[in-house]
Length: 156
Image 1 (tube, rainbow, N blue to C red):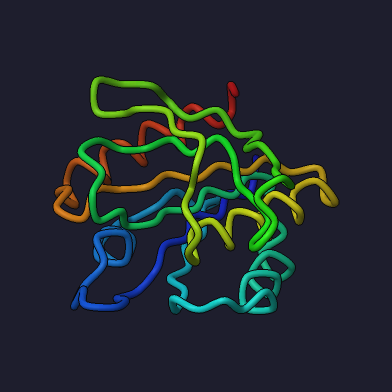
Image 2: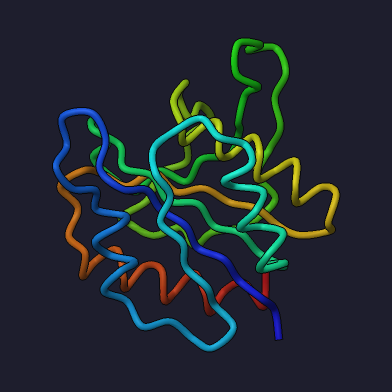
């Protein structure tokens, strides 16, 4: 059975809450699935410690997006400060009427965590994906999507 890590983030900037944190804290997950909520900061070791501790086969990062209208399946990450260096996500996420595919995870902590996560997964033969969630997305709909995604990981 695969070990799965799903992570999100706490509040940041002017946002008093983060839909990824609220959803993860309220979700019951299968036995092989772990969840972490990170502070919003550029800290490589914070991410790597969690990855090394859990040793997941699959990592799915979640980040709140202030302008997104749909769930954004992020396919590419850029090295911070060096937009010509990029990597692609290796995890296939379910496409639904609620999702869109994007190729620019931004220049904030979500993209940074994606860069660190894809690097760790390349070294450890694991798969990585990232999902940006609209800030006003309901926790019920996000939890439903995450349950569907977890089921798909065995087939992706």
